[in-house]
Amino acid sequence: MDLEDIAHALGATVIRETPSGRRWGSYCHHTRTIRLHPDLVALQRDYVLAHELGHHYYGHTGCDPRWEWEADVYAATMLIKRDEWSRATRIHERVEAVAVELSVLPKVVRIYYTHPKEARNVRQQEGYAGYYSRCE
Ligand SMILES: [Zn+2]
Image (cartoon, rainbow, N blue to C red; front, side):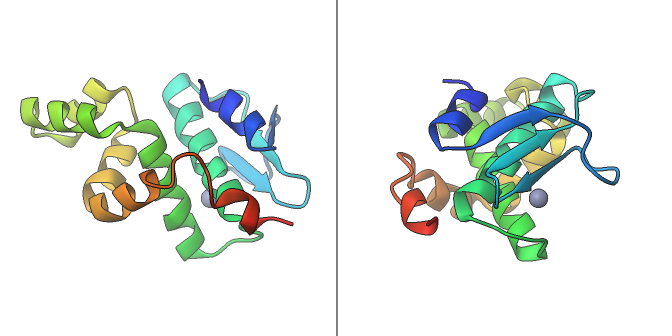
């Protein structure tokens, strides 16, 4: 299942439209809409979509540094499977090399590497059991 299918299954609408400011994407909780900048390449798009899905999942309604962190950890666990992480980090030591191996942005590797415990906790919520209780 690709990320757009997951977004749809979770009740979010994904549109390609330049967000305000210089952002790559945005999420409006009021309309459950994820905006993706139309010029993103695949790795950027995957990261932004997974990040905005994190905002959707948690029901974030504004801008707060902690929410950005939560959305980033959510994104990292969406984009990196634990067994693939284990294999990639056995083969490579550099963040960039791990990123290439996993087909993610280096930023995603840094997030996953910095917060592995939290990342695993978010992954344990797969099935999105907590989602509906967070939204009206
Ligand atoms: Zn964000």
